[in-house]
Length: 162
Image (cartoon, rainbow, N blue to C red; front, side):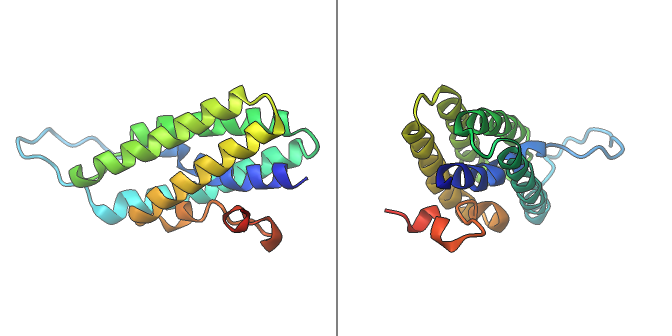
């Protein structure tokens, strides 16, 4: 089913960011100077998480191939985790608003998928999420996250559907 596969591809990218947060390295003593966040550090982490998220959403698709509503609920949970992870992501000050917008897109999509009453509602939630998320992620240089609308089947590329 096209809806389910498209849903899985889009949400896979969103879930990948769910692990975003601080590192678990040794604590350093506090400093009076604000600590600069390395640009590539948070971007690399976010991109790696997008890859992982894609795998998680694909697994949801495998578990619910013929039930778009169960799949939507599974993806909703993954997006809620993503939103939480993005909220804790340490980014440079100049990127904080853009990352907050990315978090908001994921949170809104999670709610929309959880509340979907029809397959059309699911498709609209996915399309709205994918378009907004991809654009915002691309602007932030999150290449793995920006490609969330791509599927393995070119006929199923949501960006090409109109």
